[in-house]
Image (cartoon, rainbow, N blue to C red):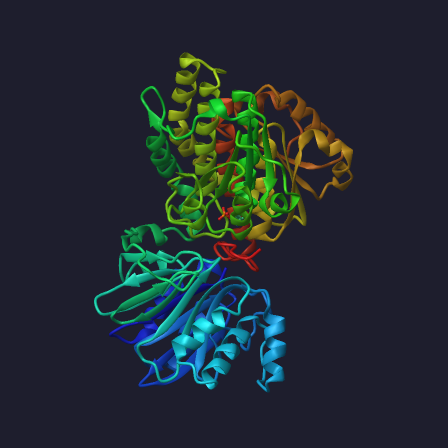
Length: 602
Ligand code: M6R
C-alpha cells in the first residue's frame, strides 16, 4: 500500500513523477504528493484525492527541479487529509514512505521532548524529524538518513530528498518492495518496476534491509549489516499495452475479457503432451498440503483444497494468512506449504511464508515473478496472468485456480491416485478451458440485466456447494468491494442453520449450481429460499436450468462444463455480475473506496 517513486533526472522531474505515480495508483489513491529540489531549494505539492487532483494543482502551482520524490497514499496512520499527505517535510528533509513505522510513538515523544513540532497524525513524519535532528547534530544528509533508518522498527520502503542536494536520494527497503531504475546519467526509484517502465527497463530490486544512496552516476547499496553489496541489474520488459485499458471502460472489464488468452498462456506453460510440467514438485514425499493466502487468493486456495483431497486424496488445509501465522500451526518436512498471491507482496502472506521457513517446503503461486513472496519461496509457480491493475482481482483468480488445479492433478498422478489415461482425460478437459471461458463471457448481456436489478439490493447472498462454495464467497467479495452492497457467500447446506433468517422478498440470492452430483441438494436449498420469497438468480447450465423447475427470478446460463473446470468458468459470471452492478450503481470500479491493490501492511 502506498506507492513511492524517485527521480534524479536530466529533465523536469514533476511530470515524470506524476506519470510514474499514475502507474502505482493501484497501491493507494486517497492523496498524492511530490517534492523536488531545484538549485538546492526543496519544495513540495500535495493534494487530497486521486492523482488527478495533484496534476491539476501542478498546472496552477508548478514545481520545478530535476530531482524529486513522489507518493500515492493508502492511509494507515491519520485520515486522508492534506496535512497527512506525503511527502512529509521536516526542515531540510522530505520523506515518502510505504509501510508502517511501529515505534513511531516513542520516536515522536522523543522528538517533541527535543522541541520539534509535530503537525500530522502519521508515523512517517517522525522519520523526517529524526533525520532533521541528526542533520542538526552535524551528520551529512545521507549519513543522517542511514542513522535514522537504524532507529526504525517495522516494515517500510522509504525515500529521502534533501534541501541543498540536487543529486541525492537515499532509499531503503525493509519489508516493502523497492526497485532502482538505471538510466543514462539518470537514476530512478519505484515501489514497482511498472512505475519505471517508460523511464528504463534496467532494474535492480533491493533486498530486505538494503539502503541505497543514489546520485545520477549510480547507486551505492549497503546490506542490513552495512556492507557494500552489488545487486544484479536485470532487464525487466513490461509491455505497455498490458497496463493500459485497451479500449475498455475499466481495467476490470479488460481483465475479465482477457481471461481466455491469459488462461491459454498459463496452460501452455504447464501442459505437455503427456503430462504437467512441474518437475520441481514431487508429491510422493508430501503427506499434507497447507494453503495460505488472503482475500480472493484465499478463495482460490479453498477451491484447491477440494481438488487436492478429492483427486489426490491428499489432506489439505486452508488458512487466511493473518490467522495462520499467529496460530503457529505445527508443520513437518513432509508438509507442502503453498502461498498464493497475485502481487506477491501481501504482508500477511509474506509473514506466514516466513513462519514456514525451515519448517516445511515452500511453494508459491504468484503473478508477479520478481515479488518478495516469489523470491522467498523454494519454488515459485507463475500464474502468467499479466499485470492486473483493477483492485478487484479477476484474471489472477482464474489463473491461480488453473495452476492449483494442475498441481492437484500432478499430486494425484504422483501419488498413484490416477493413472495415465485418467490424467490424459483430465488434461483434455483442461485444454478446453479457454474456449469455455470465452463462451461464458458471451452471457454478459443477460448478466448486465440481472445486475441492474441487483444494484437496488441492500443485501445479497451467494450460495454454492462443493467448489461452488468458495466461489460463492468470492462472488460476494467481488460484489462488496466494488458495488459496496453487503453480500455474503454461504455453503448452500449451511443456510438453514441461521442465514435463512435473513431471507425475505427483498434479498436476492445468487445460486451457483452446475448440473453435477451436488445439484439436487443445492436445488433443495434453493427451494427453501424461494419458499420464503427469496429472489433467486440461478447460475447453471442448460441441464440445470431444465431440472431446476420454476420459481427462480432469473436463470443465467453457463456452458456445460466438466466438474473440475466449473469454478473457473462460473467465476466469469460472478465477476461480470459484480462489475455490472457497480456500473449500475456508478461506483468507482477500478479504484473502490478504502481499498488498495497491493496490501503491504499487516
Ligand atoms: O496480491 P494478493 O493476491 O496477495 O492479494 C490478496 C488480497 O488482498 C486480494 O485478493 C483482494 O482480496 C482483492 N482485492 C480481491 O478482489
